[in-house]
Length: 203
Image 1: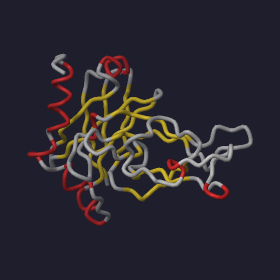
Image 2: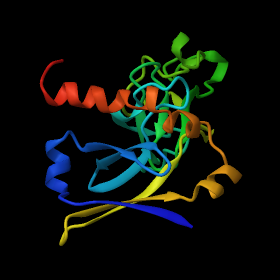
Image 3: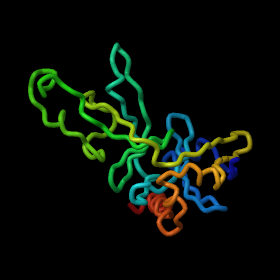
Image 4: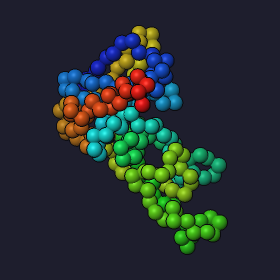
């Protein structure tokens, strides 16, 4: 079973005017959820970061490429992620998986041109320096689902946005690390507060 939370007055244009995101406090039970518009598609994910209750929902959305799957003229698989502003953890907005980059093995510890590069043998976790599309020297590694995602849809004819959240009992049978912080009224509101500050141009 799912709980449906419906909000009127929404459109894709409204999302675009709001930096392609909106934050909601769902009730019964309380839960902070962020809805994102990315590449024409809507995603919903718990707003606070599972790691330290950081404002994940206000993080930058980045497309990262799995260099391990690239080759043969293809671009490899692209994964859209939120980067937490506090500790730079990358979370897939589609699956809620924690993402990190590991070095791609090079013969004799050298780069393609034969020169040694420390960056090739040192993993970056959490992601700090390597932003956006992977440079081809690292492979994407998925570390399991840590952030709960939700179904979301927008009826453009009525302007109704619907967020579907699993029944509380169902979530209890399949708990995720973000469950606790997403329902914490004290910490969960931080994402909404930051959004409000940015909307007022106070940053």
